[in-house]
Length: 540
Image (tube, rainbow, N blue to C red; front, side, top):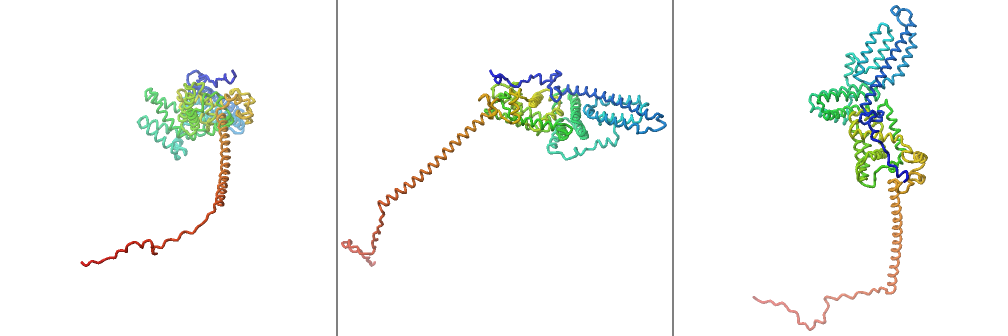
């Protein structure tokens, strides 16, 4: 049996979809194979380590500053004010160090109400303990570092600054879209049933949206951390209020997510601080270059000749494309779930049996290649960053989303070995020099005869043959029409000749009509008749 016949298809062990730490939840490629829970724990660990390294760097810079100040100022500090000239080189060095570290600091230091206050208190104790031996420039440096490390909403602010923070930003006060207004009304109507907790939820949600409007300079990871922290805190409070009813908590959190992410969509989807747009273009170009991949190459168990299967495939493509038009991460997941269910239905109808996971992933890859969804990477990153983590960890939504991430990763790494092609043929197909169905692609899958040909190619060839047959029949009809016209013309000429011959043989003679009889003339035949009766008058 040939290699093509032995090939079962793209196989992915279901254990590969789970978290690498073995917690039982679904992992994600964006989280290095971890689930959202394990990823947040790992993120916090790395962040704490980075905080310690940055505090050590701050102390090192402080010591170097003190040494530089001591060397440049031998006299006591109280007798003469320090000059800035000896400190200029160190100030330049400090600026370079801060510039070099700012990216790392922003990456690992995101808003957290649990760690920052503790670090701030430790730093204040160290500052008081070492205050007697710090110069004025060192205190300025430490204040700058603390301002850089501490989240903005946890730092004490003046009344004027607090009042300005409560003022609505232009992005919040601008006129909302129709969809935003509708979602806001639905959110308020939903919270009315909760009465007092509903008012508190609405208040917290509004305050969070206003606070996020002032964090446009944060990176995507920091924005994600803010949203995830809000989800966690809100979920914990609701769990206490509803006394552990996870179903009611999930229902409320779905509404909270819908309200918040609809309002924040324009600010957090594909932000300028990320390279999501560049990844979108790369993925789109990659899928466009793989347009020649056929169903047989991926071993997709789908027969598009069946009308119901073809209809399911079209619906699956429509759903995955429609994902980009949604704003809420849960709605985007709903599109992925709907697409996956249509895929399972197409496989079930084709095989007349329930589909397996080994059949699902190759079909999903084929659907993504045919659909080439817009902004695919941005949508995946948006769901990963801002979706309620419980949805991505368990349930069918999490399973289907994990498979979509695997499908995209497979497409990015697709090579000749994945399709059982030779490297030469794969390169020719990718560069457009040949096609699996073309005359130069005889060494590919199309060279295997009818079994190796793509259904689309076979259907097109059959349609071309039918068109060729119709063209021949049309030519025959036209020839028959022309022959009939000639026969009609000949028949007309023959009839004319026959009529002319008859006229010549039997000429037409025109005789004058007989004269009309005179009504008043004498009738000789009436001589034997009695005379007419004469009227008589009788006297009365």
